[in-house]
Length: 225
Image 1 (cartoon, rainbow, N blue to C red):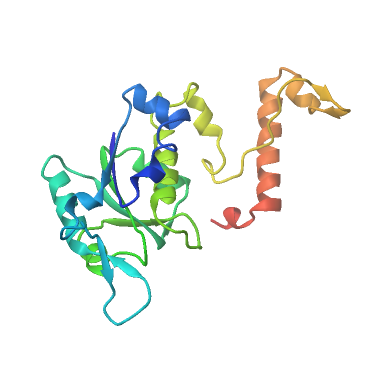
Image 2: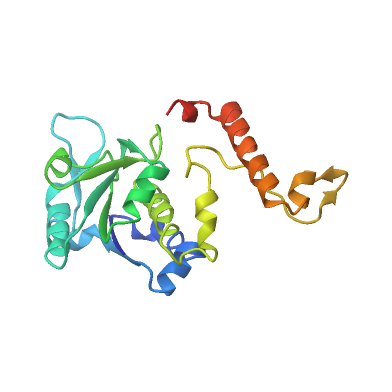
């Protein structure tokens, strides 16, 4: 898989994409991540990528030309399955979206900044808009890192134990059950006896019951889906 991220603040993406599971997946050659500075195609001697909005609203808007030229340059080299814009009004990122995108070969992610992007970018260049929640952050870089992480950890070989992702919250529409590790007792707080029983059938039944109970208590809306 190859992920190209377009941004005006590439420094914000350096650490999240260089360490832990994502960083190891890159080192293993499971994924290529290329971060592109949009000022490469900035306008004029100062390489501007934003301008005042028509209509007089407050805030600067990312211009269409630098984004168009960079996307066209990338598309000239390979086919892209999706050109994604991280947007507060896009589809809310969930496990289903991450699962779907993990099967793609090449993805472009555009990070908005300032007041957003010229709407013509969204009309003519973007194939999918994704949000990380109903709130606004300073730019699309952190949401893009979240999206990339949610995708990359699903690529076979990214996790040491590939079955681990199958038991994550939301994979089956439920929250995950509680998890414990050694010691079996600490400060009088005990691990449930069933997890120490060594009986896989009983353990699985307990985990299923706990997942359903936690979902009902904490995220009942998931059951409605």
